[in-house]
Length: 174
Ligand code: ADP
Image (cartoon, rainbow, N blue to C red; front, side, top):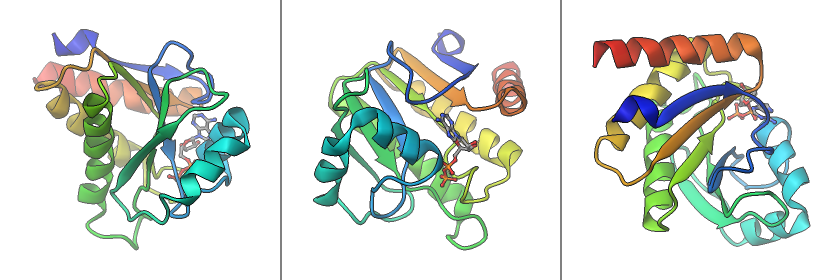
């Protein structure tokens, strides 16, 4: 039953202790930055940036997986979202992030993954459009997946409303 496996919450992606993996809205060099990458690297400690060095750079749409260090999760999955208006086709590259992240989680037998709203901060992807892509992609991937829970973690209440609406609309249409 897909509707019981996807949820949207307001919160901080670096404080999701009940999830096997958290997803980083990374930069190409996989280094600490602002927003999600800053919060996750702060929570993880310096070991994360060290491990990341060997995996960088990554391309838009690509995902890689690392340890979680001092974060309360088993793994961190790093995705490079498209910069809106520059990396094209942006919709496909954004969908690739979600698909590749879920595939990595499954490959490691993880059952729960928390995502931030990839590309909607510094990378400028309009939130409502990003929500549609994120939710359609995750719902499609879950239909054929052993994952039991996917959580979208939105930083603000306003962003949560947008994602929750997109999820409700997709589930109603299904
Ligand atoms: P990108 O470079 O992919 O746009 P950002 O980290 O700049 O990534 O932002 C992605 C989204 O995550 C934005 O909507 C931003 O408001 C949100 N965000 C920022 N910090 C956090 C956090 N600690 N937890 C969850 N979401 C966050």
